[in-house]
Length: 519
Image 1 (cartoon, rainbow, N blue to C red):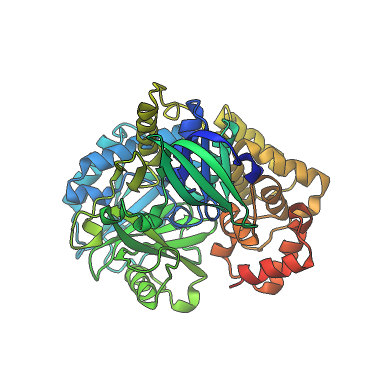
Image 2 (cartoon, rainbow, N blue to C red):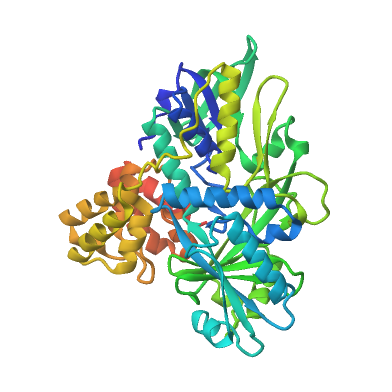
């Protein structure tokens, strides 16, 4: 994946996608697979905003059954199954526990009925993914962090997990392999409609302020929270903020679905890269699109909710890091953000410009297929969607056999099991690139942070192959190091120095990157 702004200059495209989050990436990938001439531009880095600030889940949304949104849940569960099949390295099953207490908002029978319906909608009635019920003692063995005082037992069920930023990156890589021109740090400055639905657009390279003119027949905005700046779409959008805290590990390979005692909202405790993700909140957001922050009230809400269930409570001092994202929801006038549908819609303006509004990471593929169907219809084309059955760009041919082989390779070169597992999930069949680097310099197997599964070779491979522009791209999204750890400028500097020759950074640039990364 090489960044090439010059590939845009003076070119004509069938489709220009503006926005490099999950919806933009799926749209570009789908359209390129159908043979369209595609360009996608992102004003920052790939998945820089909400698409790297999610709960990292691929799920149907068990809580939506309470609002009778069966269509949304069914749609998401179908997509969950598809992603587990088409991208087993990128999306993996995750078992959830739901504890039961005398004062639980949802009782045993109601929860049992909901989980049976969830299994039915997901086609899991007879599979290993179906739900189970356990008594107090057995449930406590699975989730020893829970306070047992009033515990009556609980249920388990299965959804799935991913690394959201790398999911987006892999789709961008797939779009490029299929012929799309993909450029991050590239802003659409203006577009002028001429001769019907043909657009003359100007894009700006954010790294040096150079501009290029392009022509495109169709234009799709998949800009997430920045959609509120578009006159044609702003009234259709409602923004809500979701906050997650990163805390020490209290879970192994299973997660918890819990309800906050203060308001009954669902939240999660999730294992992720050896830490615990705690979230999310759901509050209306009225601030600037690119300046969402974690506030004290968000932290208090999540810690209070979690500590209600834990044997040993967390304090603010236990927080390793935090992040916030902004969801775009359809503005249907519901009073509470949690009551607003998470479904998606496509709005097409009178001039033919398309706006993607709302949606979820889980169902983004299906929604993007609708976008591309619409684009093809406008172009007078009839090209079938290929992403329903297409294996992901980095998916190995035989996942089981490949996993066995790669684990053996990792063991042979002395990699710990957790490092090998996360390398395979992060790179898929590209993991051979990392092993090749290690064969030339075993020292690069050193962990960057002793408690996390990231090694120096991983850092170098990302810098060499994954369109990194800034140190924050590398350490927040190519690998979520700055989310999972607090690194000082002194600790960041040798990492910047290691990749500087690859990225062409001099001493002044290293200092600048470390400074901005540490803000």
